[in-house]
Figure (cartoon, rainbow, N blue to C red):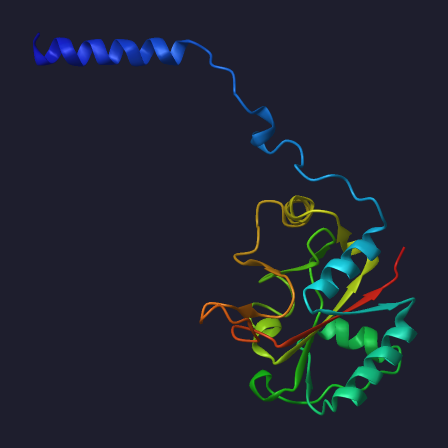
Length: 212
C-alpha cells in the first residue's frame, strides 16, 4: 500500500469519526452545575466557620459604628501604630463614623494594611481580590497584617458564583489579576512543617458589616 493510500485511509477514518456524534460520558463534568451540595446554613455563618478553621480572625459588625468600635479595639489590643489604607472611599466611609486611625506611612513601613474586597466565598472561607480594586495588587499581601472590610451582600456560596459576579461587574474588561486569599499565607514545603506568613500576611482579619 502506498503512502498516499495509507494517508487517505487515516483521513477517511477521522472524517467518519467526526461525523458520528458521541455522547459525553459524564455530562455533569462540563461545569454547568455545582458538584457541591447547596448551603445548609446562612452564608455569614458558613463563611465565619470556614474562615476561622483557616486561622483567620472573623468579626461581625451590625453597622458602621460598630465596625469602628471593633477596629479601634483591634488596634489597641495588637498595638498597631502605623495603619495603611490606599482606598480613599474606604477612608471616607470610616471617617464618617469618627475613625481617625490611619497614618501617613508607606506600605513597606506599616504594621497593618486595610482593604476592601470583590467578594467572599462562604464554602471555602475565601476573600476574593483583584488588581482592579482600589488597593491594587500588593496591599493585601505585602503588609504583615491584612485587615479586610467586607459587607454581607458580597457573600457568595462557591468560587464559581464569585467569578460569575466578577464577569458581570467588569464585562469584557476582567482584571489582569484575580486572587483568592484563603486565610493567612502558609507553606509546608520544608520538612512538611507548617509555617504561617511566608508569602503574605501572618494574620488576616475580616470585618463583615451587615448591609442587607
